[in-house]
Length: 403
Image (cartoon, rainbow, N blue to C red; front, side):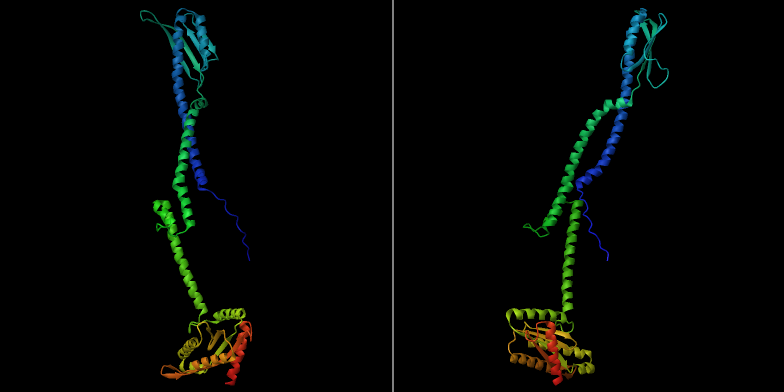
């Protein structure tokens, strides 16, 4: 025999926890996409903004170099180039002046190739007659724009906005979840525990919840209510079937009398009542005489008629509180309580014997049987059902032998 160990109870998982966990993955995915998009957008925005600022810076310094170069003041021009090279965004600056054909440089070494943005502009002097004179050329190399720098520049603003929107969305989602799912489920559970009995309004709490929800949750409640009603019908039918089965098990199908099971139960009860109230009773074991020849001559239908009529006469000859059972075949048992005196017992035996011996008509034939009746008194002849039946059986066979 295999012993199945008790399984530990499964950990309870609330709907809130499941909802948040399942919502967490799409939220993280949305966060990752939003962050990536924000970084890319910020990087391109910074590049565009940086290009504009770099061009403006180059143009501004180019304008400041016009007069020193026209005056061939290389010292001032070198100062302006040094100031330009010290700007945080500038990597190197180089000025080619036309007056003395010198090249003024500042900052790191100018790279001829690479990703670093470079700007070159001609420095032109215009006189009062709008004549233009090329006085030099300014070349500036800037530091490359870092995507990390661009991201840090704009990302924190978007993150603050994103987390604010996320908090509002989560709070609103949880509130909606509680109102639409959690609270109705709590009322549904309370309605189940309360039962299906109607209140003063004539409707049960479950029916009230079903009417309140015209949605999928209401469909679940309706299905549960229908299941409970169907289950109630099934349980009622099973109880009726059980009662009918118990009656079938306890009753003789031919005569409708109780069978051996009823005999054991009723005799045990009679013995307990006799001991408690100190009132004697008796058990009568009845065997029909001449039954077999009738059964062999006229058929089993005639025998069944004899048994049915005998059962009816026995029930008519005793009180409603007494018990008549068919032991089997052509044997019957009668349990009589509150019986006093041998004369009373003998009068009952004679009465039942005379009733059984009365002729019966069947299919144009007059049939008659006799009865051998053995009696056992309780508690004098025994205090158990087995002892009383043995004593009554012996008395019955003694009468049959004398007959």
